Length: 350
Ligand SMILES: O=C(O)CCC(=O)C(=O)O
Ligand SMILES: [Fe+2]
Image (cartoon, rainbow, N blue to C red):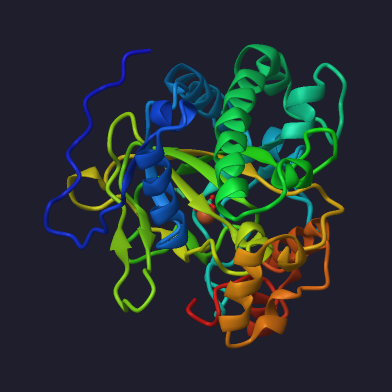
């Protein structure tokens, strides 16, 4: 489907520039490009990725997202993620809190487990609406495979830069083990005030996020900065970022930065905002703690950490996600303490 021309992203709002990393150069081992990726990943933890080769798969996923969100709410609710802390399935608008006061989110989304996408036609984790199942082999699985390739390539580079034994991060993100890895398509309808959060401030739960959006709305709060800044969408560029799991495993060498989603700014505000993410997360059994005994770089970083014990989470990847997801749910909310119980590595900044 041809992409219609969108109203421009405004030039009078605070924005944060990201480094642009060329995936085609990473693939051939270009040293400068690898260094640029490393600079971004150990700095803000966000970067643009160009030449990732997934445009077709991304467009097909957006079409499937539209088709799915047009289903009656009653039908979508049959596939709801539930209140137990599982991520897979549908989430209705307003089901999550966006802050400690219990203000609700404005987005609906569908999460498809990478385990289901790769096992299809077998059901690995749960079932999805019939139109989603029908497009699993032609749309979802190809998107998941390409996204996995991109993220595993990046993890391989981090493995080397962190001085870890070969294949360490690949093993912790093995496709063989069930994990929280998933594809998410998100719809944020227009009509809310510009200051109403669509998604509350958070760090991503997993290791790497591969994000595609067309309209503005994503904002970051960089370290040492007090003002939220937009990440301007660039055509053909994905936005990649580090999540908590990788920040913890790397002893803080890699940075998981807080971000949130607001309504699209300026002339883009009357439009529905769609975004699409593939989240790579460690295998369910992986214990989230720094890999200090396998890397001098991680060990050295930990020795500078003001509170290294805080990175020994004492929980598995599955337990980390379950806690974070469950405590965002409005149905589980008892008060501000529930929001606090949903927090990751934000360190009180959100
Ligand atoms: O929609 C976006 O641009 C970002 C979404 C996001 O941060 C998330 O789903 O974790
Ligand atoms: Fe996020």
